[in-house]
Amino acid sequence: RFCSIVGPHVRHSKKAARLADWLAKFGGASDLEGFSPDQVVAVEPLDDEECRCLSVDTDRSFLADGVVVSNTTLLEDWICFQLATNPNYRVIYASEKRTHWRKVIKRIKNRMTPGGPAPAYVERFGPFEPQTGEDAHLQPWAQDYFDVYRRAEHDERDFSMSALGFGSAVAGTRCDLLVADDVQSLKSLGQTEKMVEEFRQDWLSRPAEEGRTVILGTRVGERDFYEKVME
Image (tube, rainbow, N blue to C red):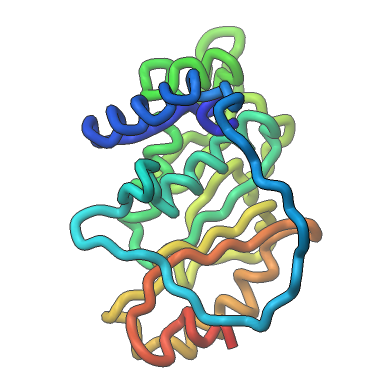
């Protein structure tokens, strides 16, 4: 469904070609006739176990059985899907580095432009970016935050998508999805206790009553942010 609505977004030409070949085996992105789902016969609870994601040295994405995989890219797909089908959806994207969150916001905004990598997505669900002439209205569209054009309400504290870092002012802001992505590195390992305290006291109160929090990242050492949050 992501492929049919948002469209596959792969920055590397070789990976894009592999994905196109894989989709062609099933008649296209929206044709699921080639799939034969297994029947669920039982669901049994198990004890909690620690698990780790796969890691690669040269890129944030990799191929798993012919499918392009990337936590951040998949999350960008989900955010684009939500803002297309629910323009009032609100996302807060938290990361340690300003360069990282700006890169993610830039890629999402790029998909929302008619000349970007997903023109069919814009044609079906747009416009997203600010308009001119009679259709223009006050609409933030900055590096660290933006509103989509069809959003019904415009609160200066809550945006369609905004960025957050440790120490940021969050009082009064609300969201439907809080994403904590790569919030710690080796340089900040000594600040773990302070980061966890701010995360629990300030960040976790940002999602609305039915909101969600998603944490993505790579372990950086013993007793790091991710280990403390799992306790």
